[in-house]
Length: 366
Image (cartoon, rainbow, N blue to C red; front, side, top):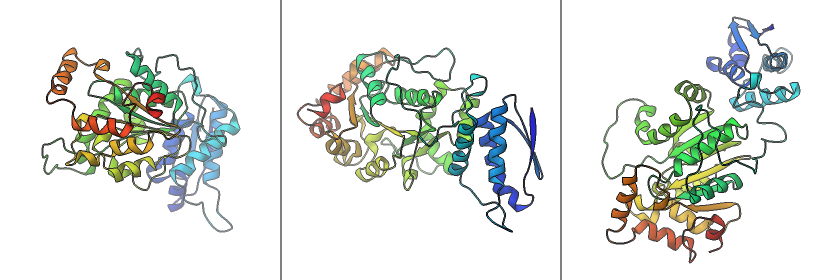
């Protein structure tokens, strides 16, 4: 089945199809329709009549004039997604052929679908045949905290799965249509060495800092899926400094290496949370690269938020290391050098007499 929709020509055409035909790309991704655009006509085709009807309705609404003698108005990406969600609901359609359309009908009037309380212990990610599930008791507590809380702090040494499980949970929520997008964030702090001038544009300059997040993504999605999601802003990987001024709705936002954020950066980040969103903050307080460890935003947040309802703190320790067995021995060797590291001491003081424990409820009441 196919239909043809007429749109204005000239400069007004951009207001309908979006810059670089962005609006058409979102229609393809969310409704699963084929689109061929030429001059003042757009041809839509799909085997799903409801998808076709929804796509046509969106384009017709985008082309509506603002008033007599006036052309269509410019709309933001968010407004276009709202239109797609509204028309998708109106058509009462499901995913074409059972395939996930991540941005599909998530911004409904009644909000995103609530997170199920009965995760079966396996996270449904995109890579076929690669189920992700917790391997230790504390990792299970961590995933339960992510399921049940809107703000979760996962703290622990290298190799305990803090970031990996957070990304897996975010991908699971995206695939099961509980959220609209994933935003992965990292502070751009050098770990002791000076990298100096890095060539290229801003993307090339920050890529080395964000590489660990890409590594986790590539374990769960194929390259073409990641590229498609990033082109359509379904997945974003951004430096912490670029988060100022944003409000993020219907998303999972993960802040990695949070021990290297400052107090001001942490406050800025936490206040970006919008409706229907979850935030996961991960960090290792034994690896604070700030000049003054007492200024760590992670430590400060633990002190300020440890008794705040809706906030969970989960600690992953050496027993939760799931990398090469030697990683656990390395952590133990360095941990025994001069006793407890300064950052870990600061975190324990911030969380109070109960210390850092596995179950977040115990930490909150310690």
